[in-house]
Length: 427
Ligand SMILES: *Cc1c(COP(=O)(O)O)cnc(C)c1O
Image (cartoon, rainbow, N blue to C red):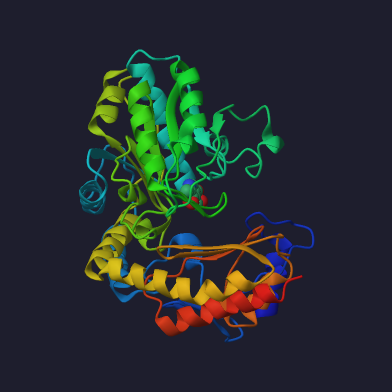
């Protein structure tokens, strides 16, 4: 099939994410990908700044993950997880328990990040019910969050940017505190969490859990907040008998400079959601971890089981990709890699501070953000990046990148220069 046939069929039949079926903006046909480069069907190569939405941390077509998957596909591609188990799942569960913050000992495998958030919410509700706190059915979160596109997850996304008005009546009404306001490296002030503390105290008897993205608010605004905020939140949850759910779907596996962003604060959640980079971006897989206390309390309650079970739960190929990706991450000295990327982003994006279009420049770990004064035009901006040989997909006022940890300094410099240049041409 040639590229124009492909694009015609795409336009005729395919919905793209957050896109329209009528006169949709252009999409670019990818033929292959290797390392940090996407190859388009016309042969052009793009340096990928997005890692396919945080996930491809080792680059594309990584030899050791390819080899693990070839081996696994000959042995067991899939089998139901009800009443059966297999080595990739068991080994991965053990690995996740070892690597994640202390106390998380049970692993529930899910098929996407949003589903792992649904699972976390159901766990929190079943847990409270099982301990005789059936009145605790609500969630508390902060503004500016993003937790996925399914209904339970949507209900805790930012109420303004998170589609709430579209689905009023179908969405659970959750409680929202202001977003953490103090920057990651700012000076801590306890007033930053005072409103949340008051809301939690006033509604504690109705609240099952608090759910937040630790340190990095991702798709809700690419905002990096102060580690003390999360420490205070952990203490408040304990004080009020409320579970803490950490959504590390975007931050997990080194992206923020710690293996898990909770480690910036030295805290452990009661429930942890993982996804995105879990398989190195090869397959869709997510996991919801919980403490033994949460898992056992649910199991002692009525009906004596946790009520969830996706068809493709713990898919062996996906688990095997995850094991290979984690092995590679640990073998690669990811901390130096991420520190090097953080440095490169800091230097490469610094010139943007002088641009009148730019309101703020921030970098944390392997995440670089230009916050603009005005939203970008999604019909024209992708082409501007593609013609400069890079793949960057902004949203709203945010032009951001999260490169693979293996991107070399030259490619990183090219990527940053393209960001600064494209932004400098905007009205
Ligand atoms: C992407 C994301 C999700 C949703 O994951 P999907 O795999 O897209 O369903 C949830 N929470 C956070 C923080 C995310 O970044």
